[in-house]
Length: 281
Image (cartoon, rainbow, N blue to C red; front, side, top):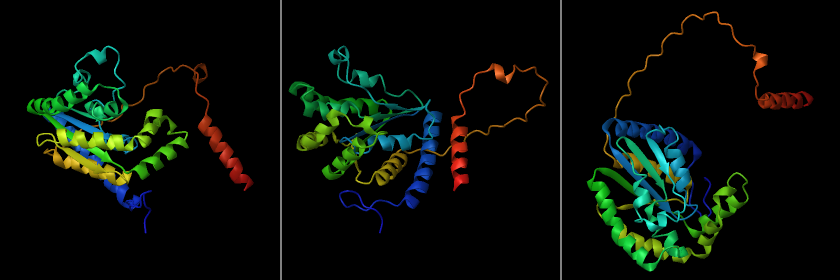
């Protein structure tokens, strides 16, 4: 029997996950090549509760992609100037040009979620957003942008377990903010906000796709497979690059090595210490 999530769901085995992830990542690279060659524009929104696995999914999706054509948009809190602009304005600046894919790690739906729950927007601003969001997305799609919207769903039990894991991990502690912790005490408020958002913005032209994320590995495979298969594209063979033969070395007067400054060989030190320990054993 394999391992289970905090809420009891069976986790996908590593022996299944790792080779399939690599296969899907290769297919995403093919998709990126098609987007680049055809001048398509792709926007992918990643939304969901804190610790739902959005960031780790994005990381795996773009792991082997060309950063010149595939980029992440993760906007900070708006500046005082941006607060006076049309709400969607700063997101428009991040939209892709021809041949680009942009993955939004949280998006304009901040207004329907955290801003609504935490009181960072007025009731009027919130209602206006819910009316304008489907219209805004329709404009993007009519202009030729391929849009995908993913909601990562996680249970309250699993979310709390991930928060506690982050709090005790010095490498991931930065991912846990005071606002994240408040999402535990405001679980029901976020649930109501999410349900309202879905009711008013899950429309035929730009539907939401829910990603079950109790098992992060499974959610990564699911969203990556859906993203690839939901965008019709052709396999394009990359151009062959001929690697030339290295010409015969010429006699060059090099500057003395001792005249240059090198970083200390820390790795060599570790290897020597390990060899010494092994010798003692």
